Length: 246
Ligand code: SF4
Image 1 (cartoon, helix red, strand yellow):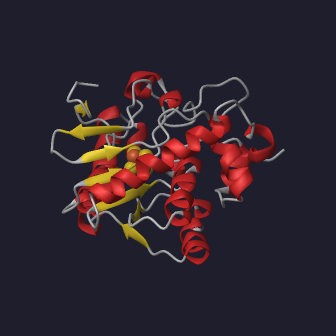
Image 2: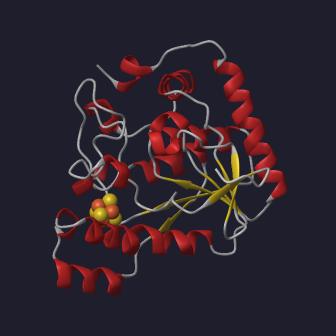
């Protein structure tokens, strides 16, 4: 059974949530014209966002992080996006010297040795290139949803980061069924790993398929306690639009 067959479901208010996501994207694009990027993980939510951006011809750049540890199926989506939407995908990679030094010092499997080493690996392979992606940009768009985890339960549609940059989360109130309903009805390309029970896809060594009944993000850093399961990309102290700490 494919991820579409398993998850797509039309629920009350779906088309309104689509319209509301488009409205968030339009506002983001007009307020931050030329200075806004969608940081796509190439996961299902981000494919929905890329489709919305391209379909409505919004001036939002599309960029991704190639950590050097992604599945081949994930990387294969980049040329598929470029061909389908006629949009370039900016690819940011970690600094070679930092990766070589880290691997020489701690080995290829350092992430399994301690949370500190896992976070150091995420720092080199994700956070540093993300910094370059966001450099000179006043806003970014992510596929965060409240349903994804306890930590994300309060995700607002837009939030001001400590740096002053604005993060837009147009799918904040979408369910997993909404994501797949959109993919099914708009025929959005998606990572075939989703058909193999990978709802949340990260780096190859740090992601596994989940079993029936397991939590959405159970396959990410599965050997760690729940509270540690973020890579740091979305961990800055945040404020929402009204300046209230989220
Ligand atoms: Fe390294 Fe795993 Fe983090 Fe990827 S998810 S950057 S492989 S620790």
